Length: 209
Image 1: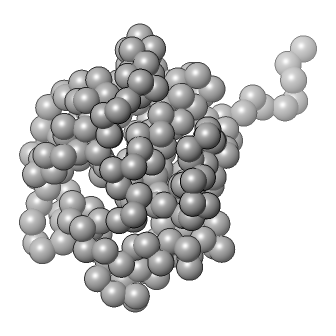
Image 2: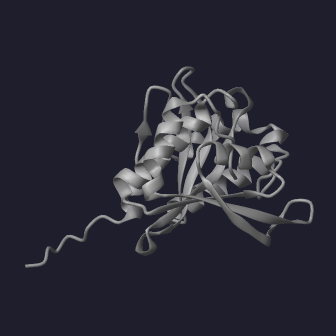
């Protein structure tokens, strides 16, 4: 006899609280506005981002859109807390979740100035990859970044992600530029090796946006 209760979907399970000794990731909520605003007013963060935050008004529009995406199920958006300081460090998301195809994307990543180069991004990616492969059952995790973002591309290669190619003129960017997007992926059979690399460090995983 079939159960009346449907099995949980990836969307049901994706937005979980994830943590280790270094960082905590939890689903975003409206109360995170001020903590994220305090670290977001840094032009470096938005250099390769698909939107730009140059003012308080820009940030509030960005936050509102991010929260709307999360609530609508377009993305599972996480706020990253640095457990060493107890402060909000930035944000990262699951998106383009395609459960039937066994794949999802990790991206929409940004960190405040004080938390770059400190291992926060490495551990955040570790927890999201671990959740994707070991709890959700993903077969493929994707990343994409701007062709011009050499730091992000190097960081993804450093953890063992495979660069697959460039989709030209992929999307519009601030300043009337169109981005050439470079795609990377990690497959389920590759996860044990990537997991080991992330656990060993000390290579810092650059932001992939």
